[in-house]
Image 1 (cartoon, rainbow, N blue to C red):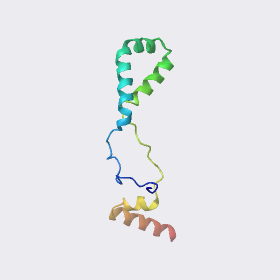
Image 2 (cartoon, rainbow, N blue to C red; image 1 turned 90 degrees about the vertical axis):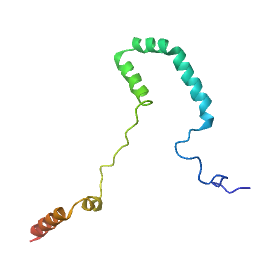
Image 3 (cartoon, helix red, strand yellow; image 1 turned 60 degrees about the horizontal axis):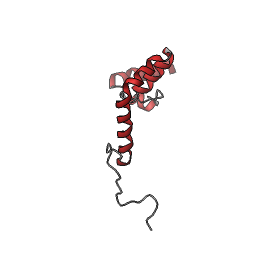
Image 4 (cartoon, helix red, strand yellow; image 1 turned 180 degrees about the horizontal axis):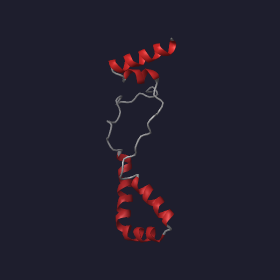
Amino acid sequence: MPKKGITNNPSGRPKGTPNKANRPLKENISNFLQKNWTKIERDINKLEPRDRVAIYEKLLSYVMPRLKAVDANVSLEQKLENLDTEQLNKLIDHILLEES
């Protein structure tokens, strides 16, 4: 019996390779949407503006890449690494002036 987490392919499916199990479902959904697009569009246009915008926003997530959240909390060490020699010297002088 194989150990948990160990498979015949230890490196797993290569990144970006689509999941074959989902392919038929995605094709069915795509075909349904294409066949019924005129009716879907008519139904969306009947919605209140707020609801229509909500639909647009949800649909956009399928065609536009999502932006990743950026952590604004940068450590002091990371900030210091980005300074050049001149900036570091100014910072040192400033610290020394404050201490005296």
